[in-house]
Length: 359
Ligand SMILES: O=C(O)CCC(=O)C(=O)O
Ligand SMILES: [Fe+2]
Image (tube, protein in one colour):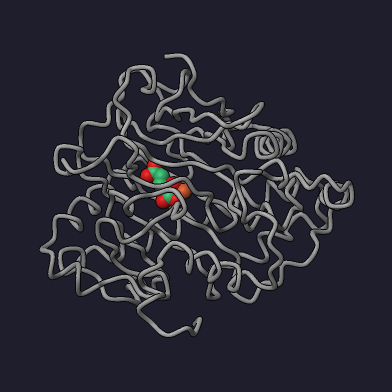
């Protein structure tokens, strides 16, 4: 089809690759698009590990409802959220997202630190290892961003994301039931409402053939929704589809809007014009997301980089480019405060039911 999103494809782990060159390509892509396809030859996270994670996700969502309800999502952003619990675009959506999700926070010694359904209890170590591998890949990307932006020291971002300390980082399994299971859906309804992610970088794993993700391309005038194929041209023969990486609001804010946090959604596309070749939205859809956040106490102080500074002082905070992203420029103190602010907005009911205290 025509009109799929323009997103650069980068191999960050090619043997003999020039690190400075890869860093430059990554930064250019993050500045221009906010989304990057990271080629996946199984070097950073093995294909088997990804497949196993999807298998666990299927097992988890097929668990008896009572088991999932026992793990209901809490204000710490961990646990199960049922159909329509989350509303990613509350201003526009008639009804909450057509999806269920399960958020995993930290693991300790291969064990979850939150209630999890019985069906996946025997597989906790595997989940912990997958979450760890995701975090390590994010650290690799954050180091490359440090290098590409000329941050002094280049470890500025990675030092703020040490896995040992508490953070808002979340491994999330998502299950979008097939449209046939939700006959009451109206044409304007979405599987996941328009939003930008909250943290620093997000990794997204998808399955071949499963359509739905779209990004808002600003261009001129009003934005248009462009589908993001799972397997873009040139990656068809790779061991696994590329891992989709995108910049979250926090990193956009931290870099004075230089790195772009792009709005995206998951829709129910049916028209051939909004489907990439070989993809369909007729089946249940599963995706896995890793939202990487700095450690809770990280103060979002200026990034020691001339390029980032210049983006701030030019008066044209590139965040302004994200006119569709009202959150990119908010002033916040710490990473934890930034996250709480965003969670309040998407889990309206949970916060309305509870007291006014932010924990
Ligand atoms: O399921 C997807 O493809 C995207 C999900 C997403 O954007 C999110 O959970 O933030
Ligand atoms: Fe997202």
